[in-house]
Amino acid sequence: KTAGKPIRCKAAVARKAGEPLVIEEVLVAPPKSGEVRVRIICSSLCHSDVTFWKLRDPPGYFPRILGHESYGVIESIGEDVHDVTEGDTVVPVFLPDCGECNTCKSPKSNICSKLPFKVGPWMHREETSRFTDLNGETIYHFLFISSFSQYTVLDVAHIVKVDPQIPPDRACLLSCGVSTGVGAALKTADVEAGSTVAIFGLGVIGLAVAEGARLRGAKRIIGVDVNEDKREVGGKFGVTDFVNSRNCGDKPVSQVIMEMTEGGADYCFECVGMASLVHEAFACCRMGWGKTIVVGVDKPGAMLSFTSFEVLHHGKTLMGSLFGNLKPKSDIQMLLKRYMDKELELDKFVTHEGSLEDINKAFELLTEGKSLRCVIWM
Ligand code: CXF
Ligand code: ZN
Image 1: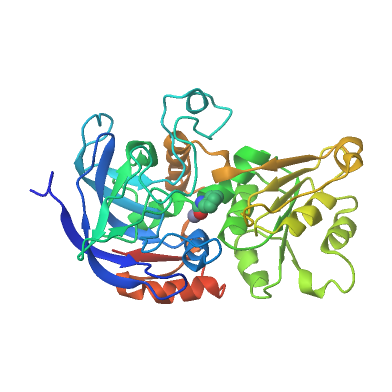
Image 2 (image 1 turned 120 degrees about the vertical axis):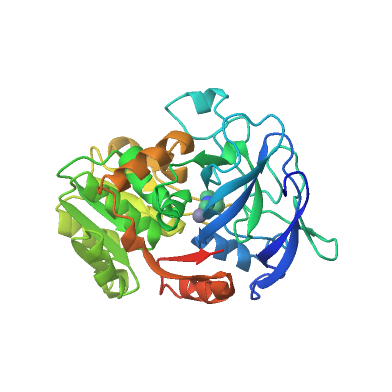
């Protein structure tokens, strides 16, 4: 029996910004009130892991256990945990869903007001760490998940119980990137059949937007990227037209899309995290009803500016989409059902897999744009 005692296990620890992760043994404390300890079965890499691993300015929190797309089994539960128990299979999610506050109870938003979302270095309620290294030094958490460890502690607001029949290496994809993109198309934009969609950035988020748009029967899906390899990749995800924004001559890419669509796309999605690209996207969404959805995460403080004419007189809408407006506890189940019903295609997102020892290779592949999802078996 391990319940109530610290667990010693392997983890990939980010000791310094941008330096290879170190596979070492760590101690994982038992869960406190409202928390569970989970044995991580597998964890995939999302680009935010890379972003925060590289973060020097402002300095990030190190040593830190990264990882936030995963699947696991509850090993033990803390006090006041009622909805889940030992042995339950779960998908951890960085966005909390407390289920009790006004926003969690409302179908209109997924931004919990009891546990405000932030990129904190601690557990969400009781702001301390559950990880120490073998020298007794504190190790920071990441996005309330830290799944690059064989065991981790999670707040109950950050887990979704899932059917144990679902393959772990597919369920884990719904923790972050794929859900975010599919949700942005299905929920934030609410893309309808026959529409024209333009997607800026064909990483996993952008490709998942394409998958959502395909599910809705979009007629045209235009993908924009600077990486020529994405022409072929996009095709597998239903992208009907590829634009390499490096080959647009002296035309802004928005003008190219305006010409291709005779007046603009119904929905534009920015999936890179570059303010200038949000302007490009907004410029080529259709007058009258065009919607531009910001999904990419730019640096803190990055500004957007629009003239009043562009917004008011042109009848356009600009929306932000955090986790695709999905409500973790209900919508992840909904997406998993669509996967099991063979509608949502998850297999094509997994390009690589490996063990914990391969994690630095996985970081390299993602940084270089050579992988989509790499699943690490813990
Ligand atoms: C992101 C969401 C927006 C802030 C940074 C982290 N989450 C997951 O990748
Ligand atoms: Zn992520």
